[in-house]
Amino acid sequence: MKKVFLGIFVLAQICNVKAFELEYSDWSLDYPKGINEVLIEEEDRYLCYLEKYENVEYLKKEDINDKLYDENDFTYFESDELNDKPNEYSEREIIELNKEITYTSTDASGFVFVGGGMDVLVSEIEVSNTSGEKIDFTINKEYLTDGVTDLYYSLNDDIIASFNQKVDLNDLLITFHFNKNVRGLYIGTLNTITSDNIIVTTNDYAIDLCQGPTCKLVFNKIAFRNYNSYLKKVYKYKDKLYKTYDIVKEYNNEYVKDCNDMIIDEDSKKTYYRYITNEYLVFDIYGNIVTDNNYCVKSSCFIKYVKNDKKDVVDTITNPQTYDPLYDSIVIFVVSAIVLTYFIVERRRLIKKSSNVESILKDKKVL
Image 1 (tube, rainbow, N blue to C red):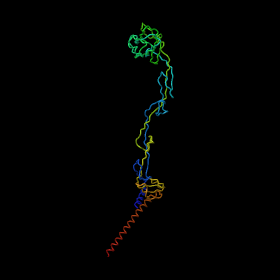
Image 2 (image 1 turned 135 degrees about the vertical axis):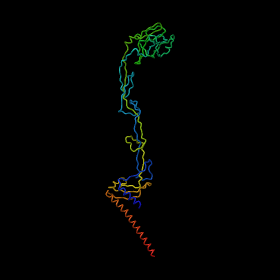
Image 3 (image 1 turned 135 degrees about the horizontal axis):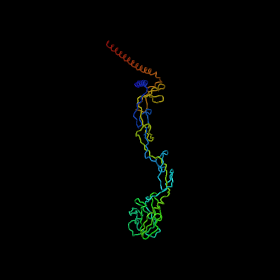
Image 4 (image 1 turned 180 degrees about the horizontal axis):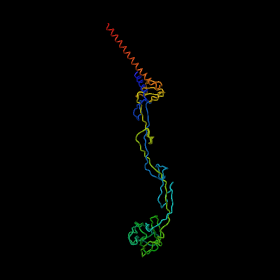
């Protein structure tokens, strides 16, 4: 009886409200136990992230390796001039040029003495300017600069020397100490522009001043000026470089249903659960929970009493027929009439019972 009146009361309430409000438990990762499945809601949630580019650099394809790259984002790099032909790559353009190399008297970085085929011995080599000031240099045969002029060595191979300071060929004096008089020496210069060993003869480039076993070579200024340039083959290259990068994911560290403008991490999915905690629910004929009473205007609905501590939904209270909004007042009137009738019947029963008691008491007094 109590459930009937409670059901009538709930029905009267949903007839006068726009929606039937559902109440829920908190979301949890644990599946609810002992709860009917129709009351359980589940929601998949994910971690979201933004992609951030790091270690961005432009590389040719052969250098990309395992890095990510964008074929539509590229630039070009053009090298400086090179003396040697560069390596070839799939998208490298090699440019070959003929460049005129011009020397000046200060471009020499060293000298070369061509040995072999001579029956003379050398003990010491000195370098200075024409004023006699020593010029510091490094030579591949250190024993020829030890200051000992009476210990001689054969010239079976070339002598290569590099100046340790800037020199001017117009003011350069190279002195050789031999064991006898010598004529027709061969000498060349190391040039700083081309790094080539330019070999020339004393007849063209040096004046041979030999006095006894000492031979001093002075460069011929006029001859040098007449032969101070030549064409040299040089190279340049042009590479196509692509934008390469690493991607770092910055996460929001919160599981959400929608990532909006962020990227969803499909591998991070977790399922959350909650369940309806209402004691009474309204269902349509298909077993769906109804939260808007306007749905029941043209469709049949019924109320069920729910016990959340058990698996099943139990105790159907009522099954009202389809009704129209005009029926709201009628339903309320009927409910009110039933309640009023109940109280009137109860009151009359009590009055009648009371009258019977008074009649019995009077009869006892007469006796």
